[in-house]
Image (cartoon, rainbow, N blue to C red; front, side, top):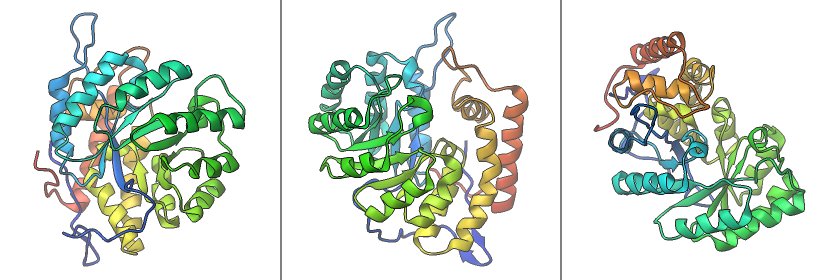
Length: 326
């Protein structure tokens, strides 16, 4: 249950007591953890395991992450009803120890989505992460109206979640630049897969560009992106935080070594459907039960063991100093 953190590369300290000052358009910077939702198995039922959820928040809150993202795709939000999601919010917000929390908000019925947003507005959230309305595939004008309507209604700033392979809707660069002009749209989780769009949004400077594809972390940061929301940061989050700080400090040699060391773990974490692999590893760490809700299924035992071995290799290379007080 301990996080390992690398000590130095070629004599250069990786972890330091200070974080470089950054010039970014908002508070959305650093490595954000899209927290899984733990379940327990009670016969045919799989209720949310709030005791395990509290353990997870305690485990990660001093690990170097910038904040939590809850009830996103990694959190199996589509398998949670509205009441369950609100209960998850309450547990995480209570246990987060002043770390900021972003809540996921997905839907394709505007009235229902706005009603849920009204409930969110009563919570002390740092942001709301929201994708395009899935399945409908609206026009660019329809997408612009959708996000601007949510932004007008939301107390917390919006972080766009651009992930066309899940929603079926592609946000063009022109649409994203239009949305960047809204005063309450402040960031983007970038899973669009278009390096040109990523570069243009970073150069434009009005949105915090956060890598959403784990393998694009280094390239996004090196171009000037402000951070990431990546599921692989469940595994040794201190390493990902160190990589972020190394780029901000222009220590690209350090960042590259960390990135290449972490990539085998990243590859394994997505060898089967997310979040099954990370849940399997967390179960091996004793933090939760390896339970997912249908139609998700648990990771194969072979992959779970490969993950254990890959993370052990990172620990052997970088040492095993605890990065978390948990």
